[in-house]
Length: 296
Length: 281
Image 1 (cartoon, rainbow over the protein chains, first blue to last red):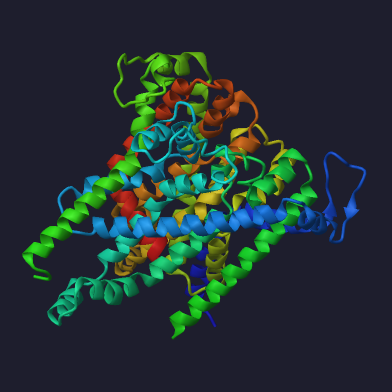
Image 2: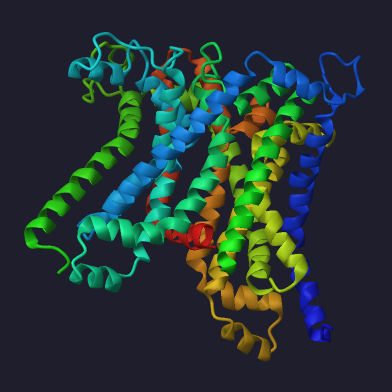
């Protein structure tokens, strides 16, 4: 039984979370349910004759789209490559920033800057630098003798996706840097010194003391970024709109096309629901594993 | 001493090389953006681009400021971002406080999970229902559509950041305030917020950055020039100035500069805030 005082406090607590919860219900939960609901309805703004319950027609249509598998493959490549690159760059820059050297704050400030830039501007600037005719990157690569004539990085089917991955890593790795740096700073100096006295070299100390301490932060970062990257729409849309010939189209781009180009909200919702299903499963698994671990 | 003098010297040199490399990688696109925006057209369209500007010019800036809707977009972005920042801050102060102090109540705990979950819900999946909802509410082409959407997506992380800060403040301070007859809200505003000023700064910056940089909703919800925000505005410039990279880069400089300057002054708070709230929490 709660005391009167506790009851009063509980009421206060509920009032405090109410505004945030209202936003959640109205603009997260409700639309989420609508997505799932719509995925089983015929809902095509261009062909309004067909309405009502659609069973699995939308799902069938989405799955049989000739570019579905391409988009799925691209999404996986895009996500895995991006996050791997971000982690490697983030970890190495964090380790470098954690050394006792002069000008740390300056370097830190510079390294975080890409993350502050709007994706649109990052995308445009890189598009400009990568331009085949007047772009500086092609010019330099030719000067260095890496390639012998300008290459249209974003316009060729075999490089478009990788080029956007590269730019995405540029923009997103600073987030890893900050977080991993914070993790590195919690590694205790005494333990490191004790290990050194016991004869552990730099490599041993890194793999057996530092990395294990970064494990939690790393897993959280990687998990969150896998999701954030998989669902990213802006970068690809801005740089190639999924082209050329669908070679950089990912699932979010396909959702956007269904919705805003074909006005087929049924199909768009079906694809959304599938992505949502995968992500929810991943999230629940992650949550369960995490809470089981913290219980141990 | 963890390592010998000579080894230490080597490690330090490597560190500097790595950091200089990273700095170049991170800064180069900006420098190139600035350089391009200051070049006359004939230097931009050259097959041998270089960092040196023979005849610096501000014609692109003048062009962007007087010959386009850039200023309208800029003003819209400032307005939307400020409102979103203020709204998210107020909402997440209370929500964060509740998550920090009252998690023993089942409702609050449930709320915490809901917030966590909502961070996992991608915007693009909600695009259609949100678009339809906004349409039904006649909010398409209004600032309110963006403010509502951005606030929703900003509140969860801000809440976790605030929770992180409140967690680090000892509860005794509040108890003595309560004994002195301070109400709960009074305690938050008089006792807790003054000590967590840095966290308020970092949380607001986060909210501001989030809405300043957002693209997709601005692109989809707004299709009239009067209400368009900066990021979709600049994207649509691309079509307008098909080949005018000078003006493109000038408008990019103008929209990145305020954020970068603000960021350089406040980066310490942001770094602390992100690490305290987002990762550890």
